[in-house]
Image (tube, rainbow, N blue to C red; front, side):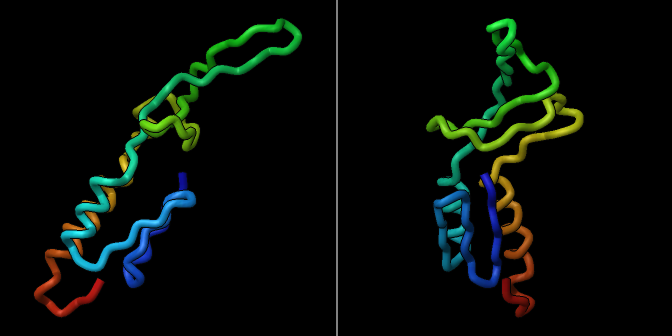
Length: 105
């Protein structure tokens, strides 16, 4: 899953899905709508032995609706999965605190 945050256009593109917002309320609603991902085991198929084996150093990432989104290190010390909605919410809060200064997102 890829995401592009374009604050001037106020558009987020995740894969083929687009999320658009015009104010902070819509931004936070969009953050709630973004799919969350969970870690799952990765398996590799060995053709000569005709068997599957777990790859212990990798995890796959899947959305709640069954879409594969990537592969990461299985060690949470090396790769912490941050949810896209959490990222958007954090960006919104950071921008919102400067709202009264005249700085535009």
